[in-house]
Image (cartoon, helix red, strand yellow):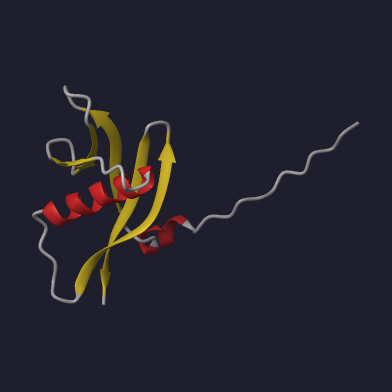
Length: 110
């Protein structure tokens, strides 16, 4: 007979949920245009009626991840969101699944 051990996962109490940092998620996807040229499309949905998008050319001198990172940065630079002088956008983490890269972005203070 085999016995399995299940680890207990602990989470913050619900009352402390507000202390979790708030992030914005940018999704990037590789596409080709009608001439077969590579493009990276970056996208961020702000609610059901507003989506920010930016498409950049795929640069063969860069790796795939670097191309997706560049697209995420270009989207951030194009956002119409004004920050205070002491604030800046910080890409805190990256992940991938299937054909997408995900960048978690937060507003940070200097």
